[in-house]
Structure formats: structure tokens, C-alpha cells
Image (cartoon, rainbow, N blue to C red; front, side):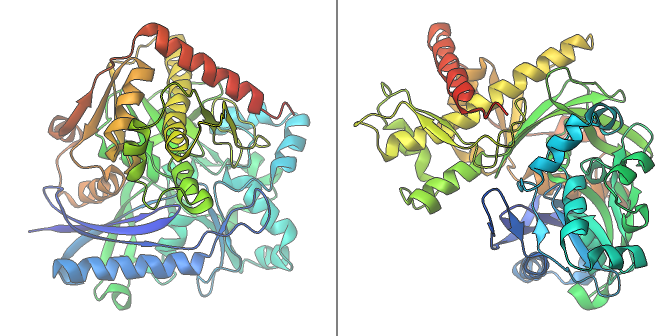
Length: 499
């Protein structure tokens, strides 16, 4: 039996899942790590703590499975995207906390660059917008604000990388300084059409290309995990950003296929094939995956707060103990209380892109309580998804195409809630499909590694093998749906900063 170790390094926790060659999950381990909020709108991680958590879960997964490192054929890595780490070339040690994708400290920098007319050129090259979400301004902020960093970068002593790059560097003991095309595409420094780091954009953000990693396919030779890390040399063969890995794990290999992942945030991707589709509705054009030098593109809608709103109910308000409680609470809530939560805790993503918006709740009465708050948090995720899919379908139609499936494939921790998925189906007026294996992000990374190793089926075969757990069909009447969407749109308009 062949085995693949999938490392899933997320925003709030690190996981390791061991898959066999049939892509069945054998065992897993998970560990949360600390979230730092030094100032309003700032979000940081201790990259050393991330590294230690990855080591711990990988070793624990091997122990649980009673499998030695020598029995692992390859490693796949998937990661929170856009989060950036500055680390020493000599040791791989981070020199500052990682700046997380949710971090908004570069809002003013982005506004200034927009006013100077740089967004259109950036969008044409990268498919992205000028927003603090992406890595470029984070790197620029580090170089400008960390004492002595500019001089060290100029000397070549410091490297920058997204989490995948940082982990590979540590796993290979500094032998491999690489990333894959999907992660490079999220930096706002990579030309997704030409497939190279953009000299114009690296100059704009004052980021030396020599401090950026080599870009490889998503299924490639990324280096060998050193023997002293896990107990044997293991090839690292598959890498993709978390949302792209989920797209692979959901077997969305045909143009027109659509998936949405519900974790800390929510991210919907529409496969557009070999042709990048430019958005007229503030969506992102990105790389879905890259195999054998061939790039497959996607339209993406990004929601910053999904599961994080449920975490806020638990950690901020203390009205739940576990996320699993929210579905039952929502079903018991007073449905005649039309409460709308706009979870703009770190600004609003697509299709609004307002970094200065902040969270708000509308419609509170004396009758409002924990159950209504739980329902509002789950409903907000569905309303935001509706916004994304409406924009996505419009862009795809403008390109002369139609979404080929009448259903949305979903994954991530939140989709364990039947209540949320039924409401999602109702508000979208379309079917929602939940797969048997919810950990599609880790599955995608394992698949990409297995593809390089020749252990797994072709993409076409993988598409046929996709297994459905439950299909949700809409049951809400049109009048109710339109009233709810109207209330949501009004709440969003009241929340926008209008800057």
C-alpha cells in the first residue's frame, strides 16, 4: 500500500492527513495556534509556532496510523494563501510575525496606489485588485517598517514566501526555495498570463525578485523532506493554495464547474479552463492549478469572514461552546426576527472590496438573543455566497459561457451543518452538493502529490469518482427569497464605509 502525507496549514490550525493510494483518509491530527491582533485591523501569526504545529501534527498522524516515515511515498502541502513570512536565508527562522491574509494595515498604501492609477495595470497582469488582502503590500510594509530589514534584503540575507514556501524551506533544511503557480498568483507580484514574476510590479512595491521563490507547477518536484525532520527522506510533490487545492479535491476539472469552501473565510472558484476571464464585477481572475506547464484559470470570489463569525460567537460573545451548536440554535430561533449580520470584521471582500467597512448587526429587538445571533451568522455566509455567485455568473455569461452545472459543490468545516446548507440552497435557488469527504483541501494536496508520483487516477477519472454525501434542493418561495435578499443588500449598503 502506498501512502501520501497531506499537510493542510490553515488560518487557525494545522492539520496532517494520511491518505492511501485510493485517496482514502487513514488518520489525521490537528492543532490550533495563536492568533495575534496587535492593533485594530492587524492580524499576525507566529511563523515559528506554525512550523512547530506542522511538525507536531505530521508526527502524530504517523504515530496514530502506525506508519513509519519511510512508508510515506510523498508529501502534499496546501496552505492559507497571501499570508507572508520573512525568514533568514541561513536558518529559515522567521524574523517577524507572519502578516496574515486578513491583515488590513496596508489599506492606506493601497488607496494611495489606486489614486496614482496603478490598479488597472496590476489587474491586467495579476487578475487581482489593489487590496491589503494580497501579499505585495505586506512585503512592502515589512521592508519599510522592520528595523534593518531593507539592508538585510539588499544583502540577500532575507527571503520572502507564502506559507507553502516557508514550510518547504524548513522541511528541506533550506535546500528548496520554491512555490507553486497558485500561490504565486496570490501575491500581486506574479504575471499570471506570462507565468513569471513581474519586473514592473516588483519594482512598484520595491520587492527584489531575488528574494522571491522559484515558481513550479502544482504537481512537481519541490524537494526532499530532510531525514531528521520526520525520520526519512520524503519527496514533496504537490503544492497548492487552499482554495485551489479544494477545487482539485472537488474534482472541478471542467470549465464551468463551481465549488465553494467554508472555513475561516469563504471562497468560491469557477473553473474557466485555459482562458483567463476578466471580471466586470470585482471578482478575481486567478490560477486554479497548473499541470505539465499548462495553466487552468478560475474566477474567484473571496469572503473574508465565514466560520470566523461563528468563532466570534464562541470566543467574543461566549454564547456558544462549540460551532456545531449553531445549526440547532438557528432552527429554534424566532424566524419572524429578520436580523442581518454583516461580518465585516476585517473589511468586506468581493464584490465590494471595502477594507474600511466594519462588522454590524441590523434589526435587533428585545426579542433578539443567542439563537437569533447564531442564525444571523450562518445566514450571512449564505447571503455573501449569493453575492459572489451572481457576479460570477454575470462574468461567465459576458464571456459567452454558462455555468454548466446547476449545483454548487461545497466543502470545509461549516458544511457539516445541514441547516446552513438548506438555507444556502434556498437563497441561491439552486442545488447544493456536499461530498462524502469534507476535507477536500487536504485531499487536493494529496492528489497533486499522487499525480506526480503516478499513484492516483487522471483528472478525468478523478472527476468520475467524486462521491456525493447529500444533495440539498431549494424549497423557499420566490417572494420570501427576494425579501431576504433585499434586506441583506440594504444591510450591506448601510455597512459600507463609502471611502
